[in-house]
Length: 307
Image (cartoon, rainbow, N blue to C red; front, side, top):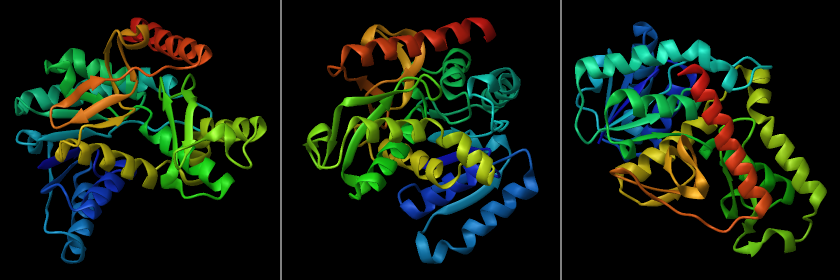
């Protein structure tokens, strides 16, 4: 499988490239960036470690490199400022994103291409890609709340001193201020979270608050997220490459799940080689369902204002 990363010279794109290289699953990693020297430098750095990691082809090209890609990951975009919400980015990023979509269409693409949007505000830009590329909606997905979910799980694990891989809790909704942690179904190693030693409402509230502010905290302290978003991207790409049919909180066009329609937002989504294979509705606490619907409304109102 060939994966092209548009924005591959930047922090997010290069971290995704390295995560894919370390994953040893995809056959070719193609980096695309407006800064050709930076793009070539990142590709060369990856190539230098190839003999230790994996027998993959590493390339750096212009947008023409996406024409035979199986998956195109779009990470290019202007960065969020520390005091700026992801939705505040939209007017600054829509013009740039439309140019990227136009380049993809100009060079052509495989009919079974999966377009994977990471650029923020990811839900709005995923919706824009669905509307402008002409691909079946199932073949366009966004990173959604995959990153938020791993942040929540990892920080909860740290507070409880348990293995992060044994924490099961998911965030749905917008990748942004109206995200909805689904505490009603949270577990540690299959055990109900609310029964787990050391868990109380104060701890849950503190972990949730820290998760909500994590993106801005990383931006303030190091300029932007890299490692965690890189492995999050690779996790989704691997689910596509291996047709794993995993249930992930990616952003996709909704047609009725939880009452959500005509908006790209994260709900439990089955992901495989064809992209979105379906969605799953689980019972939520009433307040969680209301919050999820409100999150969808926030995104719909934003779409109506700017697209």
